Length: 320
Length: 288
Image (tube, rainbow over all chains, first blue to last red; front, top):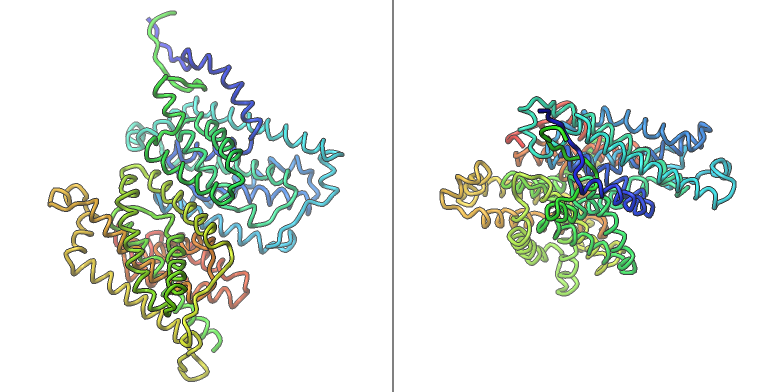
């Protein structure tokens, strides 16, 4: 008799269809889903609750602007370089931040993002605190017309979303993913079974910085204009992302995608309310955290045993 | 002389930061809760003071008589009604709920008071100063602030180590379940701890409102200053927190003297330096 490990169950086979639907949703909001998925990986799996991921959004964006405006690098080529630069910066930053535990890690990452913001406003070549715009020549090098440019950037964003999500699924199915899931479920247990928790967290933090830097570069390539306050905004790049992830379901790959959908539905219906809209979003996140800590997808998955992405491992005895 | 003056101003500012930090440090000590909404609660206290001053026409410092009990009440209700439900082994619920609270307070204040910055006027005391000789002078108000900060910290120290309530705080801090077995009602104790924390926040908020302009968005930066003072001073040490606040204040003052753009950056760098060289802080007491 043989024992096999199966990843899929009937619902995840049906799930392939749902993935297609998810991509349509992703198409509406690739950036939000990307950012939320990356944060979910960090906080939901590795327990690294960071409130400072805007540091890498802004850093990636500034690297892109610097390369394109000062070094003449083609903006599309600058995107992966921005990711790489973020990852390199994340190496010493992580060494420092990992000295802080739990909650203090969260606020520490926020301080780091503030330091990045203040440093960015000292860079006079990019017009410091007032911010700057990409010159017309650089913008035209992406595509000739405005319509074509938005088309190009949109498809790159979608491709990036698919790539990031694909990379996350691949990661979670690898042995590192097994280690991460173990850390999520019980850190002490994972450690006693030989998982090098500190090393996995470190690697994950740097990898997420890489992804976040690329996403940040692309977001601001689309905006064309950058300033320290927008690039390192805690509300835009972290608060919403956390709310999306928690509402959708933290620690599950489907969560951020569901959360993004809910976020957009709320925004469509409540955006006219201004500050009240944010207030409601905060309140919804609090209620979800207290009443359904696994989020919307957690409720669905527990009730019906669904999983969209084949990540579960089941032992199957005997030949089929 | 100019530098001496800069450092002196930094020290006095540090008193205010120590007060931001003391409330944060207290609730972390008692229930391992880091309150992300701490800074926004400071701003909320400032606005309650504003309403009090406008309604009653009293001096802001007199308004403390109303703001302090009001914030303490809010603290107790907040803890028992909401934050107690988030406590447990998982880090995420308290973090997320206080983060949500921060967004709610910020946008609620924005909706009611608009984004215009305001300031409380404390009258003649604002421009009074004390000559120290040799061209050095300190403002009476900053001096009063610093004195209040020292008094608040001394008061907390006394509360923690000399009273029955302080004993209960320390007992729950050491072991929650044993404290409960000894007949303490943890939910109530946590409520009281948050009440004390927000009473300190109230004093800090009023002093902040008298010192400078404020608007609904400045809360998170106050949280960060308080947090930095706690980490520099070392977790769990109240006097350490005062020293942490002073170091932060002096670093910012020196930074601002060098280049106005370096004001906040210098403070953050001082914090990162301490984190790199002595991650447990200068006067550590408890292990987080």
